[in-house]
Length: 97
Ligand SMILES: [Ca+2]
Ligand SMILES: [Ca+2]
Image (cartoon, rainbow, N blue to C red; front, side, top):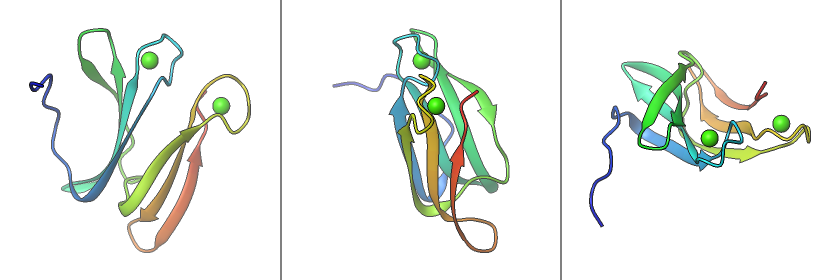
């Protein structure tokens, strides 16, 4: 095994989940944690590398986890998140539109 790609590092018991968010058969990447401020970053896989597609500042959590499920059965994976937000523990669902 060898290193394929190094992405921006985040810390504070961060979490990561992989899944095909845009149904192009390429697995995408979601990371939650802190990088100065709390972040939730979504990387899309273009076939050769993961490219930052959306950075949702303020929605990052620490000491938590991420999951992907198509909870509304529209064919797109949605993001579930739980953990410590800015001031309290939170659980959220982000709709993949
Ligand atoms: Ca994809
Ligand atoms: Ca969905």
